[in-house]
Length: 147
Image (cartoon, rainbow, N blue to C red):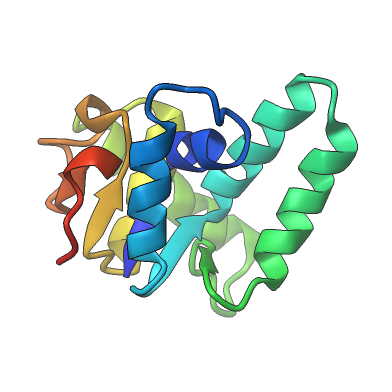
């Protein structure tokens, strides 16, 4: 499963005049043939980006669209049948383990969930946020050439 980071999705959906748009589009067109995923944290960040531009309804719509999409998985922290207290203990412990690698909180949540699901690759324009901080291979859309 290949994980797309929030920045890739933001360029693909909203920033079509960005110089990285064509590489992003080409990558997503290729990746769509693979098992594709985002985390719930990426999805909420994407909604926040568009909502902060005054398009709250579009932000809500994109969340609903992704949650119902058949061609991409939205990955949530695994909770099973545990209590709220146990979930938050596991959440804090798991995210803190990633933060201890030098990863900021927002990206730490994404890495934590990606590692729970054995993601095969992270595609992001912000490679410096991930390379050397996870064993998951990290590529830019420009450098992605499949597995």
